[in-house]
Image (cartoon, rainbow, N blue to C red; front, top):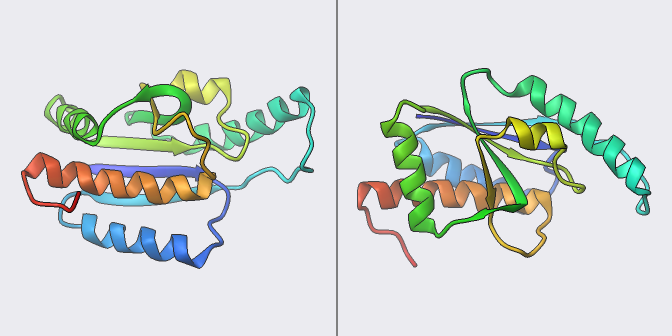
Length: 159
């Protein structure tokens, strides 16, 4: 299985990078995982709704150019469906069973994803009603992907 994580912005924090590297290494025996970053839009702290839409549009255009045509797209979005770890594992397992061996998970920038990216998604996933920094979501996502494979294989993993 090929899993692509497509995200907006550069990951600067060393502690996030180290955690992601660790889970990427652990995942090697289950799937090929790649992470692609697209540039984020520089913007002041306070923005109008029109400016937010423009930023999401520009970032969304960059994301859409990087999504492979035949991939199954999971967009991380607050308004998406919340799944337990077991249900997420079941979803990954079902995708593999029914011929979706290429999955792209998309993480937007600090303002979220454009409507076009959300429409391209085959599934919208929410990890919580909480808002998390998009850099932290990379680590949470890759850990949950690793956990999903452990669950699929019936292998032990700490709770």
